[in-house]
Length: 65
View 1 (tube, helix red, strand yellow):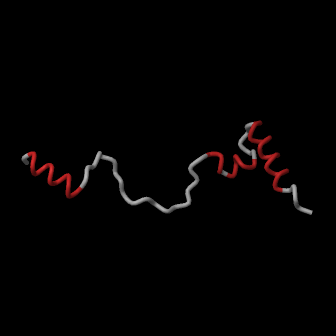
View 2 (cartoon, rainbow, N blue to C red):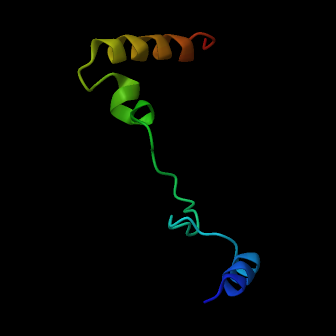
View 3 (spheres, helix red, strand yellow):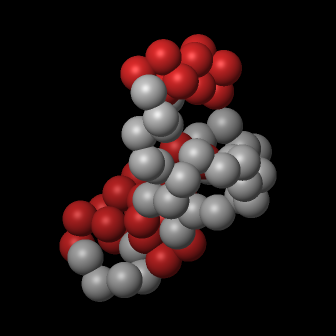
């Protein structure tokens, strides 16, 4: 290929940097540990997580009668 062919190909198709830019999945996957049930409930053993779970529970029950 000559430089003109390469340039024309880039103009027509764009530049690809090697990442597999396939279609994005629409799955509802948990991507952070903070959103997993064990971490929300404080069941995984961390004192910090248990304390945060306690605060979350208190906040959730704050306006319930």
